[in-house]
Image (cartoon, rainbow, N blue to C red; front, side, top):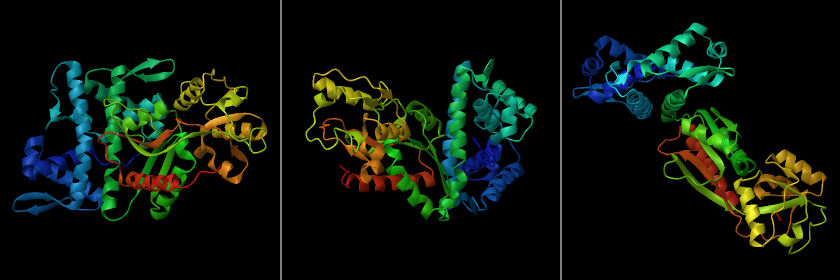
Length: 413
């Protein structure tokens, strides 16, 4: 993570315990700390957020609206860290002796977790130290404390650098989720005051990139100038890993089946059949009622083998009892596909949305071929039980609206 100014976990944990117990004194007793230390912890978070978290009432400390927003997000942060602590304890088949007030003390340090996460990304201690502007011994010390607390090594040395152990990978997943929830705390508070802000990272699959996402982003950043959007065009598997870790807020594009144990949820927005595209003066452009048999000898630009679109394409030929053609070029890169279609007699199968502007301008043509039963569902993929940040929520709503508008608009022929 690039965040360098996240809330202090130890102070936030004190805030959570004050809210749970209704008083500073009871929280201090539960955490084995002085009341003055708990008071300072609460004040530190209030100063960082520039808002009071509690009102002192005869019945005890009651959370303000800002306090309730902070507590709601904090509960998710500490649920993740508690799950990690429990997993470490089970991994060692023993209860943790270092727990303070229910959560191991070695996990209650924001900077330590950031250093670990950064080292896991860079795989090189000097690079991780430079990224967070700390010394190399500071990184080494943070990792050592985490390894002692967890009870097992997190990294092993490899010719490619410091690589996570198998246990280290599981440890990192929980740490990344906790840190990603933590970075939304300030954004949740800002939203209460009517200011939507923060960074949204979108896993952008091909079927959502051309029309839906640009229009939705334009609407959101125009209305909320403090929102920044980052798109990630990695392969689907990498995007899913990012969503599970909280590094990516959601994926937009063609949906894939997710079973109940995947930890992911799909939301269908629209469906669209595949089309076959060629340049406007292609010999087959304008020919009516083409059949799949007419296309068997064509030179094809196709998606990669075993991709969902490729499977639909091959099924189309098998239903016609024709052997699916081998591609001349196999690619998912729209720039490559566009160039090949414009400058050769090759034809390509894809969603019309992907090259919408080329079709609308007339430089590419949709061939008159029946593509029945090739519909792809387009929608959102999110992590189950993970509420979006205010900025991600606004972008998701804009995407839903744009998708509805596009679904009602006739496609160019």
